[in-house]
Amino acid sequence: MSFYEDKIFPFFMEYATRVFRREIAELIGSAEGRVLEIGAGTGANLGYYSPGVTEVVGIEPVAAMLEKAHLMVQKAAHDFPVKLQVGDARDLPFEDDSFDSVVACLVFCTIPDPELAAAEMRRVLKPGGKLVFYEHVASARPKVHTWQKRVNPVWRKLACGCEITRDTRQLFESVGFRYESIKNFEHPKVPPLMAPIIAGVAVK
Ligand SMILES: C[S@@+](CC[C@H](N)C(=O)[O-])C[C@H]1O[C@@H](n2cnc3c(N)ncnc32)[C@H](O)[C@@H]1O
Image 1 (cartoon, rainbow, N blue to C red):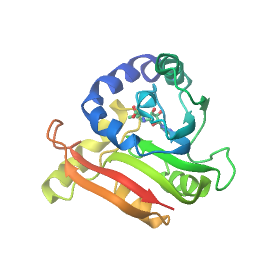
Image 2: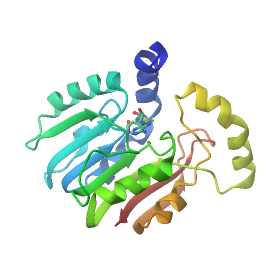
Image 3: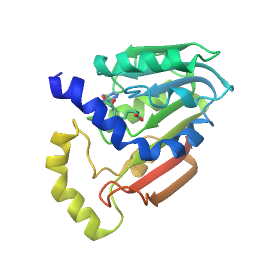
Image 4: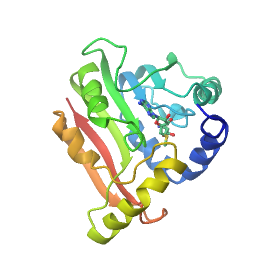
C-alpha cells in the first residue's frame, strides 16, 4: 500500500462519509447475533452495534486502517467481543453458515470482483441470516449515469478503487439474496454522482 492509501486516504474517507453515518447507525442497529463486518475500514461503524449482538468480526485489507479501528474498539467498550483482522471479502476465512448477520457499508463500490465477495458473504451467513447494507450505486437517471461513467476512471484513482457505476442491487440478487427491505434514494447532502444510495436488509 502507498503512503497516500495508508495515511491520507483514510482521513479523506472518514470526512467524506460522515454525512451517511446517522442512517448507517440506524441500519446497523438491526444486525444481531454473530456479526461479520466486511471492509471495516477505520472502524467508523463499530460504535453502532446494539446489545442484540454477541460478537463482531471485522475484516479489512488495509492494515493501516485497522490500526485506527482498534482505537474505536477501545472507545466503544462493548459488552461483546470485537475481533478485527486483515482480510479480503473475496476469500473469507470463515466456515459456511457461521454468521447471523453480515454488514456491508460503503464497501461494494470498492471491492474488486464484487461478485466473488457477494457470494462469499452469502456462503458464511446462516440460512435466514441477514445482510445489512448501505451502498452508493449507479444512478437510474440516464444523464447522471452517463456522467458517472465519464468521471469514474479519475474518481477510481483518487478514491483508492471506489467506483460510482456499480449496480449493487442487482448484484446481491444475482448471488441469491432476497430483499427484506430496501430503500433506493438520492442522498440530498452529497454531490449527484455519489447520491444514489441503496440501503436495507437482504436475507439468505
Ligand atoms: C469507503 S471505505 C468504507 C469503510 C467502512 N465500511 C465505512 O463505512 O467507513 C471502503 C472500504 O472497503 C475496503 N475494501 C477494499 N477492497 C476490499 C476487499 N477486497 N475486501 C474487503 N474490504 C475491502 C477498503 O479498504 C475500505 O476500507
